[in-house]
Image (cartoon, rainbow over all chains, first blue to last red; front, side):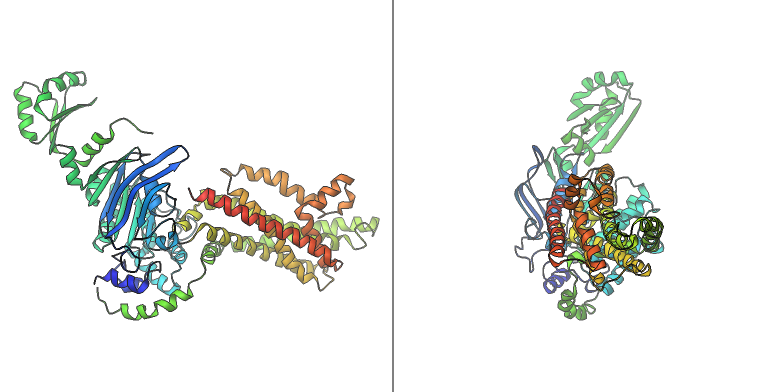
Length: 346
Length: 276
């Protein structure tokens, strides 16, 4: 029996977990299953899940399964339906159609019970800027009904985890964006959730702060916490997510692991060529047969190919002499732009 | 990671769960913690307000009024007349203050409501927790006000003790509907309008400073129908000890209905605003 199952059976669904029973961060690993009914192995299961706001359909009959213990990503441009989906999973927003199960429970009926077992990191921080770092954590734990003594110990652990111990008695107001974000994540962990939902956790952070956050999320994942992440940073999705879906206009455009998505929707490598800008279209037409797909951008030519070096040699042997040339592996960003287009969505 | 430390806490789990406080009280606790950082200033104001008003208007202006005719306000010194009216008026003002801007803060500025709703707390817990806090503030202010009134020798009936719950009820009757209203607002501009055309006129013309009999005939009818008039009459009647039983029931009933209606309305507007 795994630690999480064990903890959960004693605790029963909906009861606050006891951090002292668990590992370093005291997260319960399993989630649904024991005691909650419907042990499907899926932490979240959506079938034709729909969200409408008046006439506008934000999420349009999507299907997905999020397995226990995996890091699952939702990618998409602004307005693709990611946040609406997150809010439905977090039982903050009623579903308009289809079915949704979270930790084996029904969000429409068991909202408080589900929320007692998930941690939410919303897109916008909802920290109380006037209160101290420690009070923010403590108070949030009280919302979960955690007993005071146990909570005080938990808060110290979380301060350590978020590297905020030294700032514990300062107000939140003067803290940097990265610190606030870490505090928000620490706060979401106060009840030792088995599912953590992070809505654009690193937007607006500098690289150092992002990497520190990623490190913290890895640690959670290692402890068996199921992570649901939305992001529009492709490198982040590639780094963090075991599997992900690309959302576009409320629908799922593609699903799979980052590797699978690249294999399915892109070539292995990409050759980037830079010519004089006015020559891009001409060169694009001339070199079209050298790659599986050619994309002409205002500032460069992209040749999608499985053998980048060979393609570049072929380009040179045709007498084309780019100002700059670069062979790189295809990334999730290539897949994303291919699937959702390059035009701005506002 | 070892399993050993888990055993004692596992045994303690059922008892611990039984001790968990009701959800609305957990929401209430937020305000308690937040008040810790402002209570000094807030309490000072709570003391100063009745002292200043009673001294300036009750004693100062009252001296002139009593000089003219001691029958002007029903045969009692003006200060005695004014103090319980101000008590009710203050309860209303505190309630209105606390159920406008802080509600907007919960929804938009600090988003404390949103933080609560990501936890097991439900919309009604957030609402009741906040309402309970507003009543705490009203109770605190009313208690202090009554103490100051006693110091000014304006309390002359044992019934004055009942003026405390009466003042809190007056505050509650305003808090709930104003919260319901605040939850529908996008900006705080409407609050200024509410004050200018609601709270301030009520404060001035509901019998707080002078008997409504001074008003022209039709305005008297309007004034007697206002909610603050009920609170003022209730508090004054209790403090001066001349309130009839039926009158008391009438005033209290009016305020209770307003409280109940306000709570029902707030349940609807809070849900509409916070659950989308």
